[in-house]
Amino acid sequence: MYDKLRHHPLSFVSRMKRLSEGLFCLLAVGTVTFAACTNDPYESGDAAYSYLRADFVDAYTGADTCRVVSVLTDDGEQMDFAEPISCSWAHVADSTYRALLYYNKVETGPVPISLVPVLFLRPKPLEADEAMHTDPVVFESGWESANGKYYNLGFVVKTGLAEEVDDRHVIGLVPVSETENADGTKTIGMQLYHNRNGIPEYYSVRTYASVALSDFRKGDTLRLSISTYDGVVIREIVR
Image 1 (cartoon, helix red, strand yellow):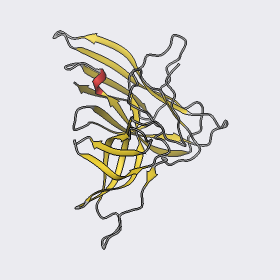
Image 2 (cartoon, helix red, strand yellow; image 1 turned 90 degrees about the horizontal axis):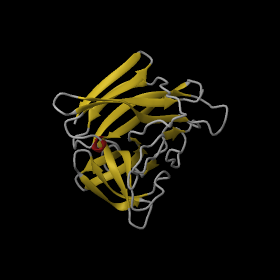
Image 3 (tube, rainbow, N blue to C red; image 1 turned 180 degrees about the vertical axis):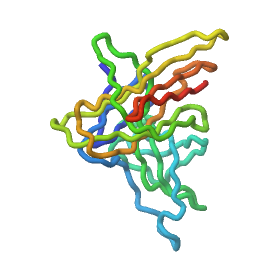
Image 4 (cartoon, rainbow, N blue to C red; image 1 turned 120 degrees about the horizontal axis):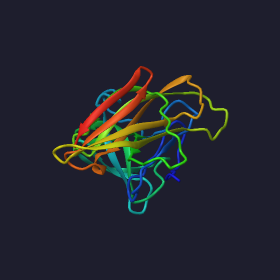
């Protein structure tokens, strides 16, 4: 069985702390927007979103609370919140979540607007009786985070209203090949797993995922294949 965490409509939550196995994450289809926790926007003489920024972050819940008390951006900036943020998807204390933070950056410090959960992917082989699913997505972008911890992906999932309330898109990362190079490094083939479970394709939902690069050795090459409506996109990341 894969680790399964609580999810909300068309979004996902991956708790990073103390998880040693890869995750297949489930995407519900009740709405077509990400569920995000929000704060009241910054009010000043300027427009509320004049200083709006968006950063990928590791979000930390408190030792004795499920609320997010601080974040660390991929650029290495630590932000501590005077008022912890309550998020419906952060349900475990003393844990780390991957998220996209929207905030106003002002002289007095960051003012959070919303935290959107980001899919956290680690490689996990299929079980012996499982079939590979490579339903297409619309690939938009891929880049290594500034801190070198993640390879971030931006893509669009097409979805709609499911026949069954519990139907989900399932997204994961599956190792498919491993080749040893002449210099002793390895080239590791990975496939983005996507099973839309027959859900119709009426709406487009922008989705973000982060692949944990700590799962691969320094010097190795990760060859990531992503099935799209225009064919297979291959991204190579050298550790």
